[in-house]
Every structure is written in structure tokens, then in C-alpha cells.
Length: 126
Length: 138
Image (tube, rainbow over all chains, first blue to last red; front, side, top):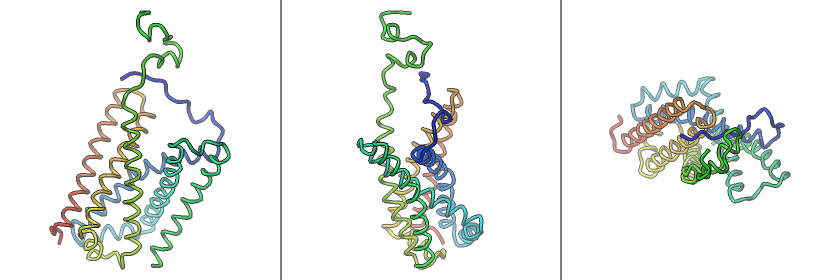
């Protein structure tokens, strides 16, 4: 492996919305990769194993800690989704202007929270 | 230093730019980058399908959920979701490991564990969906 220099570390930059969204993208992505996919496999495994295993999965997920995990995962998904869509625009060379870049970063944070609230509202009401 | 090589002509090992000048690209970035984007589209569609389906399901009893998941379209969508999300997660965690794990030996070990876990996890998910779809589950 060729040893290449790494990018500068986080501490030398001044914080802004774009930085927050950037690091949240990494945190939510890796968080979902570990916790989210773990819950997904537990869910699928419990479904395939039968009602008894599914009941213990349901009991865990409807406990207070279970709701914290599930709400946290849905927020992580919607936040990661919103910043991922923002990345698509930057991939084609758009949205690098300072003002629109900063505003879209703010929009990502708002969208993540609003979509999470809408999803849980729909799940509980419908 | 040997002046016949690009590195010899331009490279001063003492500076960061000198360490990369003349090496060219690592030749493995574009493939990774494109796959990360393609699976992101897959994730958006398939997780969207899952979340909307969860909202529309009448209840979350074992009979209801396993009956839904075992029918052809949801079973196909969930199998694709497992493949797309695990592949996307594998690519994303690889980048995190490459950024934060410096020592080459530790980096190789972390990437090996990541690959084994991703393949094993996806295989387990696909097996569970196949069992539900093909009628093995009670």
C-alpha cells in the first residue's frame, strides 16, 4: 500500500452548517450500517423463525429504549437521505456557491427532523 | 534520488505534495464512487418502499408482517434492499476505515472483518426472506 497524506483534521476548521451536515452524514451512515442493519437482520430473522421469536423482537422494539433506537434510526435515515440528495447535486457540479451551499445544508437538517416527525405521525395515525 | 523516474525528478519525500507527486491515481476510486451512487439510488427507492409499506400495513402481528413479506413483490423488494443497503454500507464503512485507521496491518484487518461481516449479514437476510417467501416459516 502506498502511503498517501491524509486530509487535514477537523479541528483546524471553523464550524458551519455544511460541516455539521458533512459529519452527520458520516455518523448517520456508519450508525445505520451497524445498528440499522443489525435491527433489520433481527427483524428478518425473527419473522423467519416464527411467532415466538417475533414476539421477543416486538417486545424489545416497543420498549422505551426500542423506540429511542427506532426513532433514532428513522432520523438517521432521513438525515442521511437528505444530505445524500444534496451530494447528488454537488456530484454534477452544482450548489458550490457559498450561500446556496450553506442554505442547502440548513435544509438538510430541517428536512431530516420534519420527515422523521411526518413518518412517525403517519405510522401512528394511519 | 534516481532522476530517471517521475518521483525522482519531482518528489521530495519531506513534503506532503512530494509524497504524492508522480504516483498518479490509486486506480480504484472511480469504481467505488460510482457504486456508492448507484446503491444510494437503490436505497432511496427500496427503503422508501419499506417505510411506506410499514405505514400502510394494518398491524404488526407476525401473521400480517410475514404474510406481506412472503408475497412476491415485497419479497423481491426486500431482497434487493438487503443487497443494496449492505453493499452501500460496506463501501461507506470502507471509507471511514481508510480515513481513521492509519497502520496498514490494522487497516487490512478492519477491511477484512468489514467484508466478511457484510457478506455474512446480507446472506442471512436473503436466507430469511427466501424462507418466508418459499413457505418454510411456521
